[in-house]
Length: 400
Picture: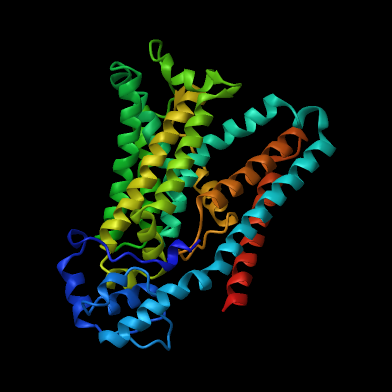
């Protein structure tokens, strides 16, 4: 199974801006150490265009020109799965390490609080707590793999929950409340993406500004008050209270978002382009990807996940509040990092991010059950993040 990052799609003709076409055709002999640039170079000749999306180039590999170059490109395509096999195994090993960490935490829970930890109600509680941040984590995974960062997810979720629970919105019923939350989250994500992709703002600054603005707008709309879900809109609350096979519906919504996110990232052109843009934006542009538009869509996807998370938190708390989602951005980013996604972009997985999230959620649960101080819990999370980043850097250095 090949790593998605190694396959850079040439992209359809209507997804390439005129500037991209000019750059690609003007530099047919340019070589780089990325597969995307190799694809652009190969596609300069009619014979090499067919294999442009899967050619693996190295720093000492000459560009493909004419019949001989095309032959070398085909050989590279045939050898690609052999080269990528170890990388796929490394990814699986990383996931096994996260599973082992979860098992270790479960053993700690069974030893310290056996009467409370290994109960059905506690396991359901862990899943319910993970659901809201988990949906946000899926969106954050896409953004970080694409080479960005989104600090505004918690504030955007709060803004969506407040907007959806105003009296004017609730008067239209629960379905309109859900649509409102999703649209508000997506719109905020689009603003982030536009500022970053077309306004050329640094992602950290753009999303930091959105964090402050969204939180302030939520406070202004709610007058710093908690807005209750009114009678007649119980459908929202039932997402948390209704259970199927003993599990709340909101957990199934979380699982559905994870499955859809995994499929999009691993089985679609959008996912392959996300890895390409995060790995090397310039090479992705030369390969025919509209990098700006794709970046904006990544942030819109993150905002969409924030809107869905707003619906889940309204179901759990029966409220909309400007205080919802406080520090959720840090939890989501930490879960993504622990899951093995590179902060520099180009590598990561949905499964790894969710395993990292479950590790954080179980740690929080253990601290609560053992009656430990919340500040100690934050210190433990901080240490885990530092260790995860150090291990990530060591892994990269050992491969280079």
